[in-house]
Image 1: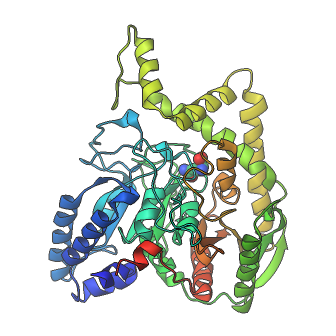
Image 2 (image 1 turned 135 degrees about the vertical axis):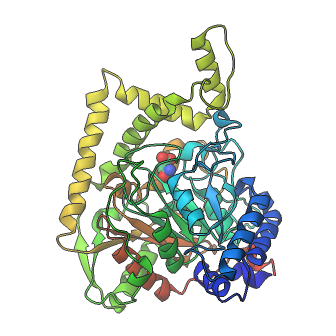
Image 3 (image 1 turned 90 degrees about the vertical axis):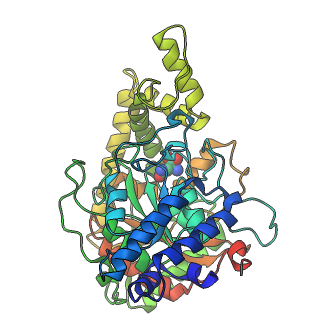
Length: 494
Ligand code: GLN
């Protein structure tokens, strides 16, 4: 049983195709693992019956020598993707009982390629957060714990924390995430996984509950870079239903993993050396530089001068778009309704009860920065900063092909450690938001452990639509780091 759970997506695919294992067997192992790890709260809705049906259908296709790139692979689906006939909550009370009559394009692509749905994974409410503690369905626990205080419950990062927790705990072979300011890369870093945010426009956003439409992108959370390449290839593609999805061919990402980065120019942005950055993160970053140098890359010192404005700009643009996107939850069209004397009172009651504190904070900030008197001072200014940040990257690409940075400013933290300080929480995204503001692809790769035995990631950022170079470089880092540690829970599961 445990052997089945330890297979990577690529390995499982090979064994499924050679009929050494069946999709049903693999799926049963994961259904059992979901039950065993239920106290981590990784899933909002488990769909074991659907999983069994889908696995049986995969086995029938495999028996005929047919099947797609994800045939028989049991995955978790972030509960932000609409799934036809399966409850979709966005981890919000306001979507109570919402069963979409349609399928998101990305999840549909995965089912078409043969993937098996294990369930809908937990997240921060409407994907707003960096710790997966704002979910109406409760916080997700990281399967990793500190060696020094094994009883302290740690966060898995957010907002795709249920997806990350599930893959790290071996309760899903892979999972989808969405990344608006770091929500794939940040939880990947905190759980020892590979998390890939592709270029804005690479994956369709159709059918994904919208947070900030100019920033949101879907991507995979996996255990290896090769798995990331396989899954991204299936998720990506032009979609006429999303006017921001780009009509450009999806390359064979697996073929990009040549292991050869000789002559590649890797930029090290000096502005990412932030005040108070833990020494361990500095050391890991330096180690990453060394690994890439040894593999034949050329290291270049780079400046991205507007980096320090990225977080403030993000926390204006993202709430502005969120306040507009979330206007549709009015107690009439979806989910929850709390009645009132008048229509306005019904709206207010529904939104007051239906949205949690963090979502209400974002709606208020967003409404404020878009209001007549403040639009120019905040929103417009933030958009200008965004343009500058994109220009910084464009200039950097004159002298390098990818950038290497830390993925997160710290390892996983305690569930209660940053809870009451939103600003402290927002700082988690310091290395990731720039990639969203500029629309660029980025990946977090597990690179080492901190002094307490917790995983830390390094990030590779690349040119728009050059996921191939990003993945290739990430695979070299992965190989060099030889990261193979497992969370105590899994190590102890035998
Ligand atoms: N932590 C960031 C936020 O709360 C990013 C979240 C995300 O990428 N979905 O806005």
